[in-house]
Image (cartoon, rainbow, N blue to C red; front, side, top):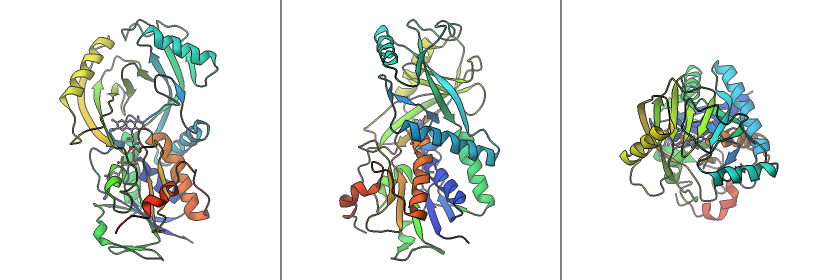
Length: 356
Ligand SMILES: Cc1cc2nc3c(=O)[nH]c(=O)nc-3n(C[C@H](O)[C@H](O)[C@H](O)COP(=O)(O)OP(=O)(O)OC[C@H]3O[C@@H](n4cnc5c(N)ncnc54)[C@H](O)[C@@H]3O)c2cc1C
């Protein structure tokens, strides 16, 4: 017997993974999404990198989150008959001798995931570089370009997807459940990404939105199966010969549109880095739902117990969404605790001031 009915708002990577785990737990659910063309989930490279920054620091909860993400995307891919995730390495081109030195120092401290390329010259045919390369592995690319529409199609076939902008005026919340238009449910879970910062239940949370851009190029001469990194990241994107080149982090912006300045600087960088011909075929921009503490927002509202959130994925939606979507479903069905640093209850005092 189906136990709970849940309304899920948003089908970016968070809503996709949350609805996946609802289905796995045999929960009754409906997804409402307004199919925004430039959501961050549709703009992202889909990269899962086990280390971060130039100082190659291991990411938060790597030993739990990364294997969990790999296993989950593989299972979704099997069900949808797509390659949802690909394992590959990141070739890290040292921009100067100091970066090489600090990478070597990290390696000597037995830091995980990093090594040196056996033959430093092996990419000479394709790239201009002087200071050698490090290797980061395993890394992954989540094929969001296929995964999101394939999951949406699956939901449509199951009659569990509504294309619509969720209207807060039509939501009624009581102690026993929620009513949205003609849908009666036990809970609403908001996976509404950047819109979450204007969601009346969660707009007091410390979001730290930032905008990012990417250029999509056709470069059939570049070897597939690797992610390349120098002053930007070049990642395989959807189809053979297509690469994603990005990104930037803009903290002050008045719109979410691509900028001429980014296109120009990316083109300059590509011209000096690549030896193979390429053609620009698209330019994308979106706002990341990042948070001040760089930790996601997961759990049920401390006052409105039937309203929940899975958001604040920042720059790492692909790696964080699977594990925290699973934790939230476990929390709803078995009242198990949510990881402290991600649990929305750390902001209970702020959220208790929500005025509706
Ligand atoms: C340039 C760029 C590059 C990035 N690269 C990577 C990367 O390589 N790897 C990585 O892990 N992360 C990356 N990110 C970050 C990643 O995109 C985000 O962490 C992730 O997409 C957030 O997913 P989400 O589902 O929480 O939110 P979103 O993608 O914003 O999804 C929210 C969904 O909810 C819908 N929605 C919102 N409000 C409503 C409403 N009222 N009614 C109906 N529907 C609604 C939206 O249309 C959308 O479909 C990148 C981001 C950018 C901008």
